[in-house]
Length: 466
Image 1 (cartoon, rainbow, N blue to C red):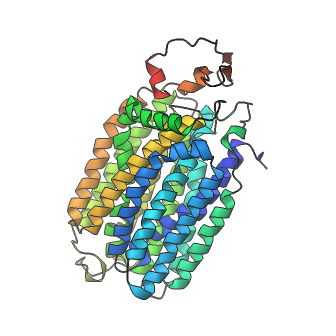
Image 2: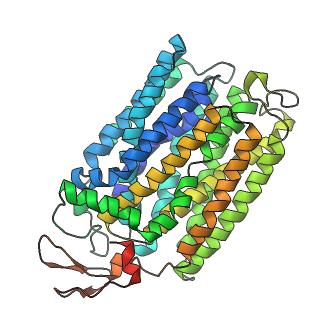
Image 3: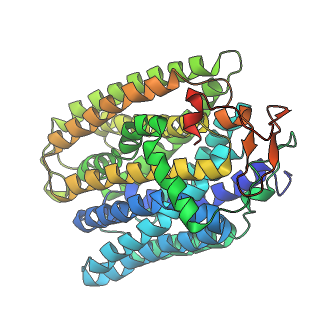
């Protein structure tokens, strides 16, 4: 059993939280329209969600640094339960206003929760374990999506309508349990790695104005600005994959079946990428370059497969013009489209894991990571809000696919440029840190030396942590 204050135990706890909260949300979204036959309300709610998510992700780093990870994460998890509960109301009234408003609230909670999650899985592990921790988190998190797909598939196996109240209620209960699990999280300042080093640089707590200044300073950080296209693209494709693809041409029970395959693919592929990114036989920069090439090639192949399927229809749902009507998993003609959706899960996992791994190469400090992850999730949410608006405004399906593919291609060059400048150790794992508030020098345990009271002039790489 891992120590309570160890990075592994804290990573397992936050994985459980995301398993029960965001994991259930992903399972619902993956059904297309959150299990509703009419996806318009869900698309509008997702657009509102990601708009508020963008704002509270950016300031979420400051909130986590000042309030810690425990209470903000627990409260944030409850917003997932609130959002899911509104679909019970929608089943009886078909009025989507409450769901859209709950989407705004969920954006607030989700922005803070995912910032805290990023701090734990990126900054807590040591340099040679980052990919392993990201992979373990992704496996546990996606098991939530996997089990969330089993519920509607099993309960609605013989039905063709929207999800029943009982299914939504199960999701609500699980999300509330996630909030309780979040209360088990320990403060970042108490986390000690197995080698004796701490997960965060010891310094006095920053005030509100100082924290706000440091958050804003991230917008001048050239490395994070170079990664902005990557962040924008990282959740962009969900709107198309979940609603335009899975939600448009498959029967309701097949959507649940596809969800099982999608999250299974994410779990398996995450483990495969970890084997590459933490392979000590190659320099970290080389591993990153190989991984970017693999992700680019696989993503383009999947979008090419999706285009082949997409050219067969222009309308979805019960009025689809797909040849032969909606696809069911028991039909042989569904095999190809289902396989494409499976590999969408593969490239989803690889891209998300790459994002966290690259950010993790820039810093080992929990406070700095909170600001970087907040920036990443904020830009990510802007992209997601745009994508869901494309769905909500009924932009032609082929055009949506083209935009998704283009966003991916545009994101990769700058991602590759950052990867080509990766060094073997995160910058603040090698630099000594002088706290302006305590006027004491601190030791970077991993680097093994102490900084004098007068720090040296920062080199060009120091920009990534200032």
